[in-house]
Image (tube, rainbow, N blue to C red; front, side, top):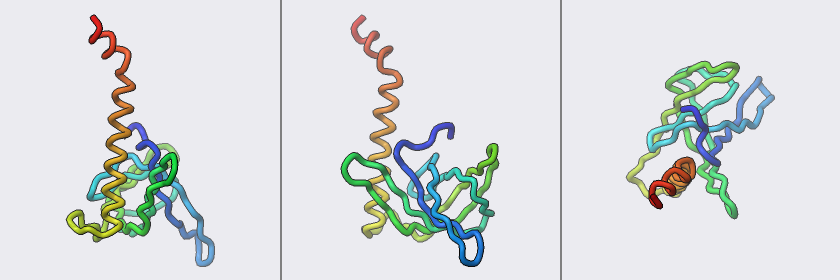
Amino acid sequence: MNNALPDLVAHFRYRHGFFRREDVHARLYELDSFGCVMKTDKPFEPGDTVTLDLVMKMPLDDIRAEGISGLVTEKRKHCSNFFYSIDFIQLDENASSPLTEKMRRIREVLYKKQTLRSRRAGGPSLLSRQTA
């Protein structure tokens, strides 16, 4: 969980008081079909519910999965921020809803980006071994 996932951000609204709300953009560090790990400085407690909009940055058109409800299950402090484990609520992987399809597409693109980055990280050494 050292590096944030490439080009993937969670957006949510944080309530400061009765009338004041703030739009927050947080980096994600893990994502699967059951939930995610998010890092932010906003305080949540295990058992809190948060509604996320996941946005995968793309060159032409971003992929947006909006209105994902999640339950905060774990909180870990890291410097002045917190890592939160969030389990998705009512996100059925077998259903063919537009939200499920967008989440599936985000995970596919994320896997491809991570694969390309890992190839680039080991690139010169692999090339020199193949030519020798």
